[in-house]
Image (cartoon, rainbow, N blue to C red; front, side, top):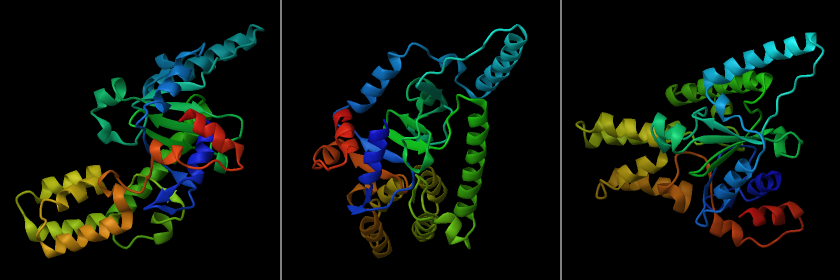
Length: 284
């Protein structure tokens, strides 16, 4: 897993241009369908599972129960330990890519999973990998299995949501806050939303609100799809050209600034002197 994430960091590109990736989300179009199945195979081979803990409230209840049992066992002179799996179900405990389905589908059909990496081998001091079968992979600082990590993860989540809200709705935002080098989240840049909303207002009033809401929800791919509905309008054609120039061929497949990779692209990369690259290729 560590080799794979290092490999993704090395191969991060936007519009075929290498970028310095420090944090964010990778989206992998896996035509081989091997990566996610191997991760699930590893999960199913684990001795322990904590799927009964998955869920915001359930996880807090189990933390409280573990603390009570641990204190009781110590007073009784027994040692209490909780077996933690390497890969575990996070269900709908993820704020990323909610457009992959309804709440029911995100819980049962397309759930999120997590893997805690405790060996310090991930880049940039990350200690957790969030992933799902659509397939997205996001390195994070903290997972959810331990209470201190749960609290730290929640704090980071609220800071991120606050930042996203401010950057989306405040026009005169602080560029250092909203546009940071090496940050490639699936957030849609406010500048694209604002420009397209202005163009839409000159084209249609009947469908304006619905189309704007869809663009806010699904991001760049939806904005690009909507531009194709008005192919003959000069302002639309100019805007679409800007999108294509900025994002390249994957403009119709992205939500925001995530890094998009394909297995064909990765498997065709020549081996380097870094042994981690070879290990990562074996997973693909």
